[in-house]
Image (cartoon, rainbow, N blue to C red; front, side):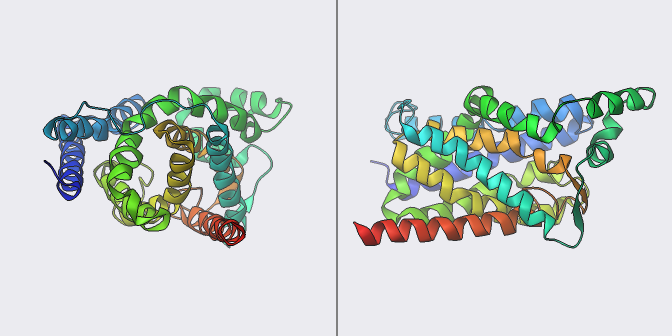
Length: 293
């Protein structure tokens, strides 16, 4: 019978190996890691933990998803997962404005400065006019869209990751308690991103330091994902949290001017500060609830 330790090491080895293999093939392909290519590659990359889980489960004589919380359980923690992800983005946005390199831009200049290169020069003026004519800022429009995407298409892709991090690893590490489990899974989850980050994901200007910064980001993201997974009894709560966070992650960039990919937004220093504050509040809330029970 395969022990928990062997399952964890086999899963980590396989998921890391598949991620590195995909990144190597991408690098050797000669394709530029931008636009549609980056989108398709990133989507496929998210399913490497699922493939690793299937192998581990088979090696242990179990069905691929059995005992991992893969079933959907309808309860309030699915909503908590979605709202919690939005709160993480909000506090990270506010924390970013406290940094000296950033400032709030209520217009569309920050948006166009960051994403204008994706628009053909001859269409830039027309796009600016259309954006300025919107009744509310695009950053606000992005939030309800993030909720919808996070509970649907994004959740499906996030499930490919979460069945590993908050499925198999949760089952094997659950006895450690929420915070220790979150710390171990967060670090493993963060370094699993290293191959794709070195290709230019999230930190195209600073890929190498971006690897280590994103480990910190995943470490800070992990407690909320672990909490909703535990309380809901389903990996889908973590997938919704993950999917909503991913969908809303670009919103701070639409209203923040200045900074670099290491400082701005939820994956930058702003995210470290904001999510650090969130986790402090979460720890106090859990402690008070425990003290009352």
